[in-house]
Image (cartoon, rainbow, N blue to C red):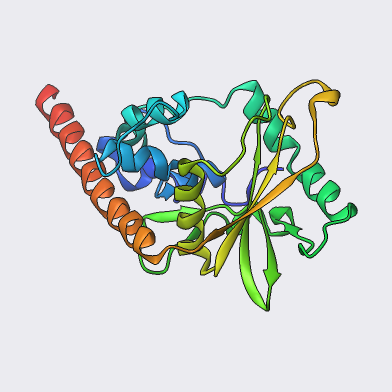
Length: 241
């Protein structure tokens, strides 16, 4: 079902008519275009030179780092997710159901974010409104709110959280005010073969306030570059008239 605000003045072409040669998306996609989402934070940090890529940096993060500022400025189109990413996203509710149904030991049950009205998302950071997140799920541990990030893949070869995942969940903690994050890893759940799916693994990622400060600073710096890109596009359009 389409978001209720489709076609309203939230569309970026209503705000920046001269700087938007590409028609912006509407609904959740349009709202997210006004911010840096938590999953985009690894690419943002690399784009700004605040972090350096290494041999383990996923190719999609490097590709997004090259395009991110122009995408937010409305000058380039976001690329569609691949088939594995689509399968992983579609499997999230199944991952949550499997996690809650099995013996979890001392781990809590979690609530998937599909119970939140789509029109409320993405959530916006109170301290840096150019930073946002769309949570996957949440739980409570020791009476405190804990952000839950669900990660799936095809090969199922992760033995610990990647640094990009740690950056992402800290951005999510910034926005949600969560005390920390539970990374719920579902190995093989992005594969098309049912037999590749294995039991979920949970890792706790502590909230890192120093990292959160850097992420908020990156969002501010990144948006200055977005505005500069828009200004340059406006000037180019004006020069052509």
